[in-house]
Length: 160
Image (tube, one colour):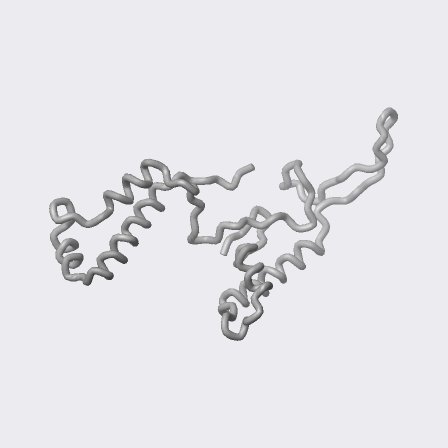
């Protein structure tokens, strides 16, 4: 679950919500209890935030200017920028990470070097690896590669 800059929590991505909304067979492919609870919390937070004003439109009358109104913020911790009824929510849930579409060279190298090796791996780890079946070894290598590539992927900040 992520929390955006306005304090609203987002449990599901827009893609997951769209899938659930379009699903014809929710009986056989139901959302999890965690997803249902998260959707309810998110909807309640959205309703609360969207019902509370963040600014007031006030009359404006300054000679030489065409505008007839201005906006006065109710909250002083808000930086100038677009005004939304409810702010856009972040799409990256907690525990997830944005990664490039194409892996960086460092990601590829680290992923490749994560494979267990009889010369470079710890002897106990190598013995455990050797005792695995072929499928278990493949899954283990995939997890090691994934973890190494994710750990070395570039970071993305959510700052404007």
